[in-house]
Structure formats: structure tokens, C-alpha cells
Image (cartoon, rainbow, N blue to C red; front, top):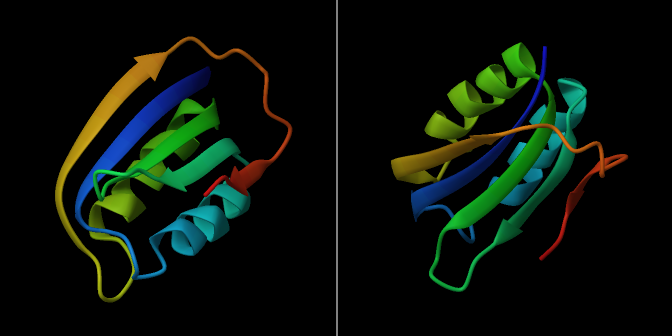
Length: 91
């Protein structure tokens, strides 16, 4: 089943390779969307694809790359829109 999730990750998640970590996993799982740093120090992910693949992405980002420390995750599930063709880093 196709799904879309907006995930915000809080903690020590900037300056530790979190966006590249997310990019690699999302591409491996066949997801589309983006990852970006936010001004408040968190990281935002919008991922679209198979719901099981998004759940696997969430499992991985809960841990994060070496050097990261994830304190909290906020997940908002949405209907898929089909407006992405690839998974990219925005900023």
C-alpha cells in the first residue's frame, strides 16, 4: 500500500551526516521525497512509497548515523500525492 509520511527528527541530528544517511536508506528502500535541515536544529523528511518501506526508514532514522542522538520523532501520515520522482537532499 502506498503511503506518505512527514517525519521530524529532534536531537543531535545536524552536523553528523544525518541527511546523507537518510538519503542512502531511502534510495535503497525505493522511496521518493526529500530530507532537509530545519533552522531549529531538527531534520525533516518527507517520504513516499510502500508503507512497509517507510516504516523501515523510520526504524533506521530512530537510531541515526554514528554521532547522532535522536531524542524524539514526530510522524504525520498523509495520503500519497505522487509529486516526487527521486529522493533528494534539499538543504
